[in-house]
Image (cartoon, rainbow, N blue to C red):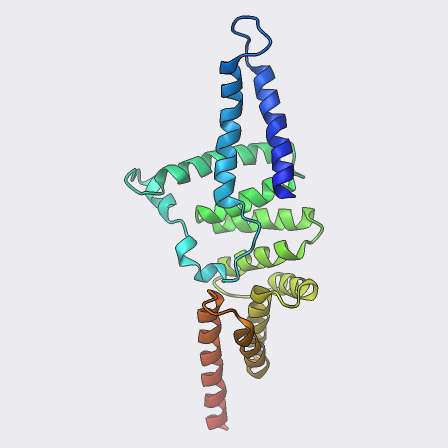
Length: 238
């Protein structure tokens, strides 16, 4: 559905650009005009292919070091030798356009999602949190966006699950009880609420259900070991 909407939007934008360009020789159709009209649309689609994967990863964003695009810092420093430099610059230009479009139409759901994911790509976590908040509200509290919003919000707070993130996780879990990342954060909620035994049960069940080599496995196993150590220490203290 996302691609259908994007295709329709792309065709509309291409038509607007084509009509707005001046006629060189007075003819109705111009190959040069058509090329100028379709180029920015193709660029936008190419960048969306990098940012717009609607499938949520099962690994907490804080653990996805391979996806953290630290090239934004290099771009600021002018390091054009960085392999991601040009991509980051293209994404930043696209995000600037999205910001302008959202000022005109603040109810553009896909615009907020693209801004949130693009901001994550460039390491701007705070702007990503704000954009996800807007997208989540406009989506009618979509559970997939709920967990993506919670994931980003928790990352921005260095792993702390506040009341807003808690509500997001519980909403996502209520709609998608088998969602792996939602289950992981539910276990973390229990841990932070000083309920280590319940947290251990939740994470142990999650570990059992995780596919082999799932990227969430390392984080889950690490938390299970920490919880077991905590429970052992409390048992000895008693």
